[in-house]
Image 1 (cartoon, helix red, strand yellow):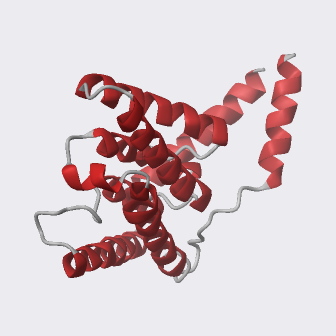
Image 2 (cartoon, rainbow, N blue to C red):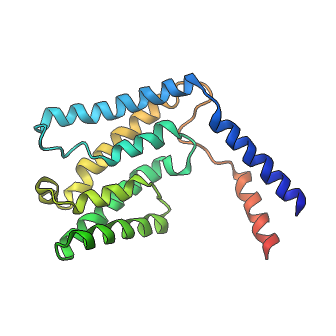
Image 3 (spheres, rainbow, N blue to C red):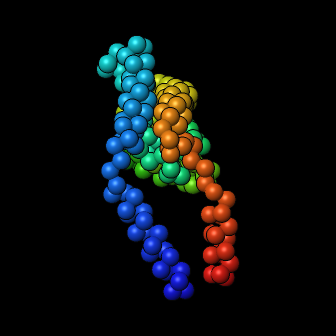
Length: 198
């Protein structure tokens, strides 16, 4: 048990050390990925909608950019989570808006809470998905007119743009790989730990 605690402590120190490192190359590629990902969505927005009709560029894409360009190795930033988390949350948000009475506090809380549970069940946890569900129930005529199309465009189309840019920019520099491959040995270690608890 003591050995296990020491190993965990060393691992935690290493993670804290990694988080405090300043890697200008990593920051450069994070900046470029986010710049081009959001820039491309914003460009398409400006070509097809007036600036007042902010439909294509939803706020949750900014939070997704932080994960997929800045925390490349995070399980929450992987393609399945990015696409699944956004699309499922959008579907939840639209469903809540359509079937519950128009009471903002009720719609907002049910949409976000339900989207979290759906992402947990489907193993597509992506924190910005909660914002995607929330956007669907906020008073916005343009979003509400879209109905379930909201899940396809702007949500799916925007998430795919972010993903394509992430696949390009996150794989250019050496030592940075996206999607991040979780080694099988981690699962073996986790299974052993679970057996030891039983």
